[in-house]
Image 1 (tube, protein in one colour):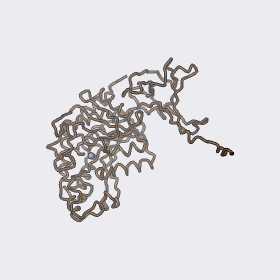
Image 2 (tube, helix red, strand yellow; image 1 turned 180 degrees about the vertical axis):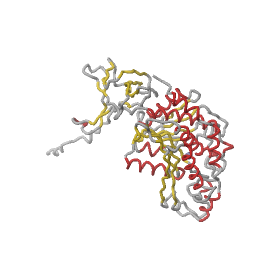
Image 3 (cartoon, protein in one colour; image 1 turned 90 degrees about the vertical axis):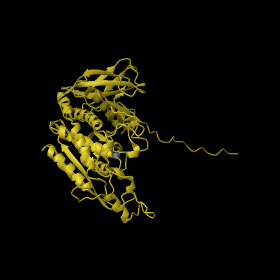
Image 4 (tube, rainbow, N blue to C red; image 1 turned 45 degrees about the vertical axis):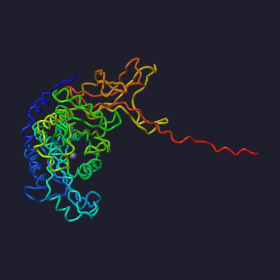
Length: 445
Ligand SMILES: [Zn+2]
């Protein structure tokens, strides 16, 4: 396999560093994009910023369905006054399976730490007028965090909307990340209610620097964070991204980090992962922390060349997923026995007790499946080590293969060579409940 799709290769060439740099500079030019900043000014503050992002999305292609998601936030611990939150969303409907969605996201809001309540007697629950003034007047350029991610999302919307894709691509600039992932959380709540089929979330946050404060640099590497367990949907997505990047963007290396996010920190992918969607975070391994959340997170301190490279990795992954067949099903609901009602893997040792007998179900509504590949790795290996293309079947036996010390999975491959995400056979955790005992009578004396 490992085929190159000409449409993806062609789209990759359209990603422009000049445009990415232009967007980062433009976003800096709004002075601040803080959640609490001016919503109505023509050139400064969040209102000017989200209206510009909206109009850019609209200018890229008439096929992009652009909308603003508005929510009134109530005053709470971190939201120190009632404020309107505005996510900017652009949907490119899929030609074949519009219900299947791939999300590419970032947050456009920005923060400068000195915006925190400054008055000696002010608590976060009781901000002073001065705080309000601060969020209007203090610059929060936020070019790396997260103008860089927003620039990648916008450039991908421009490039990808020039082509047709099988599945739907959704480009999102979230608001309110800096005050508790608010825009993403509200989006996830609505997505769950609507029963949306979000198959992957590529979240970009801080992809604009390639040199740390100590001078350590990493400009051909991008960290991709995915939450445990080791065969979670998010982890399979991270493996998929690494594989696709090797194929399409050989000048960049994906450093998969098997951890939810940076140490003790979170991002807009977090609520998606928690809701059971496959979601990862792209971040530079060369974060310049002292500059983040300050007035120094500027274009002068950013590296648009690096952001452009990370955008290309995103494009390769998003476009591959937008052409990919659905993920096969490798588990079913048990109808009898001690696991009745539970989800159990369709993997057994077979009649011989020494084979690996794999069964799976074809992804729903998939017309052009060419066949399936079985993948395997040892339990301690990070990536799939072996692969067998087994043809258009839904059962396969690996003879004389112990299922106890390896992980097995299935992916679907369509007639053009597009590959689905891997579905891995996961062990059903048994919940045996307490051991029942019979009260013994106290011995007679
Ligand atoms: Zn951020």
